[in-house]
Each structure stands twice: as C-alpha cells, then as structure tokens.
Length: 172
Image (cartoon, rainbow, N blue to C red; front, side, top):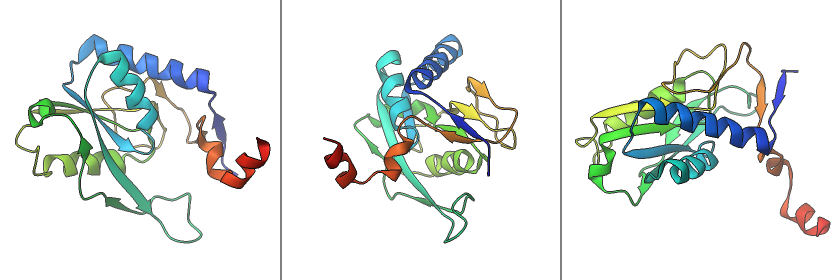
C-alpha cells in the first residue's frame, strides 16, 4: 500500500497562503487558470488574496479498469470557462494541486498555447502547485512543498468521493 500524506483543511489553507506569498514576491500574473478539479479550491483562495480574474480548464485522465492509480490518456474539455477578457491572458499562472508526473501541467501548457480564443494574447505562462512529488519530471515555477517521496496525498475534501448523498442525508 502506498504511503499516505493526510492534509487537514488548516494545513491546506496554510500551504495555499505560502504559495500566494511565493507568487507575490516574484510574479505579477494577469489571470489564474486552474486545472479542474484539483485546483478549484486553490484558485478560489488565490484569486481572493491576489485579486485576479480566474479561468478553468477541465482535464480527466482515463486509465482503464484496474489501474486507477496510474495516469492514462488526458482528455481536455472543448472550452475553457472564464469571464476574464482576452487581454487578461497576457501573463498566465497555470495552477494544479500537485505535480505527480508532470504530464498534466506540460500538456496543459501546450493546450493553452494552441487554444484559439487566447493563444495570441499569451505572452508568458508560469506554473504553480501545492506539492511536487519526488518522481515528477516537471519543475513548477511556484511550489511551497517539495516532497522526498511519492505519497498518496489525501486532501481535505477527498473523503466526499467515498460518501453518497444518502449517507450524508442519514447523518442529518
């Protein structure tokens, strides 16, 4: 069984705050783009701290039955979701929760550079995540926690994947 790193909500928000400080000290992005679902709470907090517009891209990894812990083929959404103006995409900060292998971040950069509505506005893309695993080949520009191993990171909302709405109703 893989090593687990269990993150409390308090620890999670403290790591996001450390990330905000790293970004603030050396980069002035014009927009935050989050890779869903992992980046959703991160860019919510960062956009409030840094007062920046946000955008989302949805990516799923299909690995097949029996190999759920391996990354498979990446499937990108057709469109990015954002209310930001095209001009806001000059200095992009692309955010994911972690750099596991680095494939998702690398492929997302490539996707953004080819995404027609904004590709001609992008001057720079930098990356950020909360955790970088030891085996990741990708070096994010901003990352407050660089791990010396490759644990399964149990984030504060992950337990909801195991709960059904019926179980929540029964608790209430």
